[in-house]
Image (cartoon, rainbow, N blue to C red):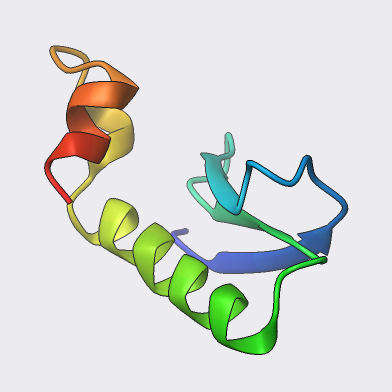
Length: 70
């Protein structure tokens, strides 16, 4: 289905955001609610890049390797 669902939740201060695809093919973007408006916006844009580049299906790269590309 590929909808993007944004959720603001309390996360540890070192975690700005993360995305989890679900079984319906939707992307659930979790953003740290303690971030400023600008930080939340930039974190969402970062997560969108992961979605657009299909990073969740790159089994040959670790999360660290994927993040290093940004």
